[in-house]
Length: 170
Image (tube, rainbow, N blue to C red):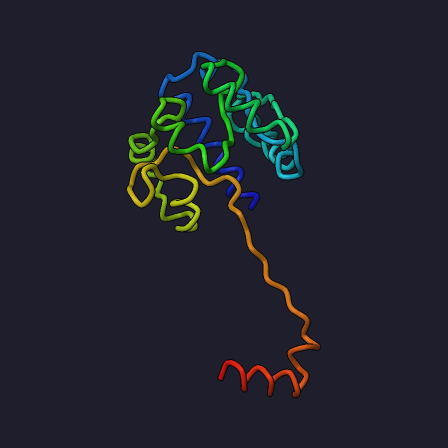
């Protein structure tokens, strides 16, 4: 995850700097907007390496999840200047692409030889493409939803449950 977050931060920063979307992107500092939670804190730590390597300072605007959508959708819709980089919700990608809030990254990726094949395919479709299942990239997967499965080993080792399962499901 560290390398993915580091790559996402670096690529997003470079994409903004190279596209001249925001005057602030050419400044000495960039402001990243996201929700206030532990992965955001990890990104603050990773940004220190980014600043060392590039000389670009990082500022952060983190808000609680309860205010996240309202705060940053208002920022996007009002064409605010706070966020140079934003880790938006996956549900925003279509509207943000259609309404000019996100920058299409295909040319930048081609120029920099960045391949979306380096990312988990489901996260590319879910967090980067618009329209879905097209090679039009508007974002990088920064934090994919992860499903973890756990089970009680002791239940699965009980012969009577194995027999009951086999009888019911074959």
